[in-house]
Image 1 (cartoon, helix red, strand yellow):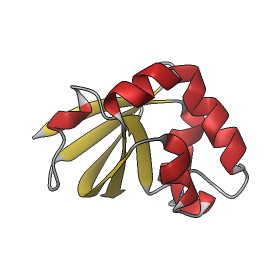
Image 2 (spheres, helix red, strand yellow; image 1 turned 120 degrees about the horizontal axis):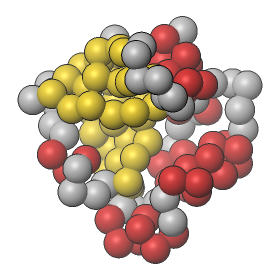
Image 3 (cartoon, helix red, strand yellow; image 1 turned 180 degrees about the vertical axis):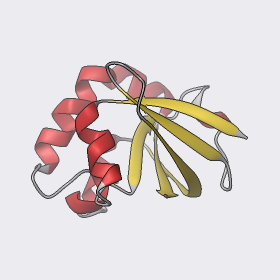
Image 4 (spheres, helix red, strand yellow; image 1 turned 90 degrees about the vertical axis):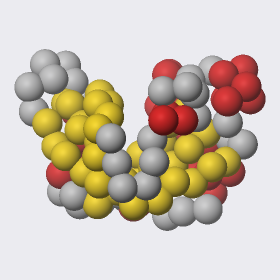
Length: 112
């Protein structure tokens, strides 16, 4: 199955250069359809003209972003130029604590 996910340019670039290898998302209805072996096409915001295709190689279920982030080095979640606190703050721009509590979160492991 193929899934399309939009990414801010910074995170798209982290994947492109090979640092970011786990995508963090809310485990809502859309992400519950993702399975190991599926293809994800990342589209780079804002224009969505640059794309990158990856294969899902693992799914990591957690109750919160904090729990997930604490289990990994920042280098595989984003890039060493960021801190874990900065990454949490970015995720809070997209997902509320209430949504996180309702759905839980997922780390999508992938390879280019």
